Image (cartoon, rainbow, N blue to C red; front, side, top):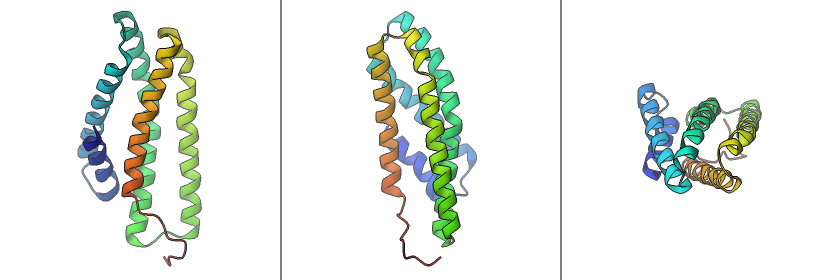
Length: 156
């Protein structure tokens, strides 16, 4: 799975003019791998499975917009960094956009808690959020490894 995550991130960050189909194909493959991991880890019964995957489809759809915004933000930063054109105001704007996206993601995740609790026992809901967080953390870690840090004294 980490190979797919890396591919997706590399396309988003370092190939700003990459084919949108390529990025979408990588996203779909990543999503499929994520579903396999969740399925293996949750050990759902037949009844739980039906209810869970219906809620999960809505959850991923709603998180999808934030995910797209995150990758657009990464792309903006990467383009500016590569072109040497990040101004002080750009940095302020990028940071504000980052926090807006993060708040939206958290709000979306919180809004689904009650729906998951309707179809799964509390321990499985907790486990799902642990797995989801672990996958998000792997993606974030890979992004952090690949994105350069902006130097405070860089002249752009």
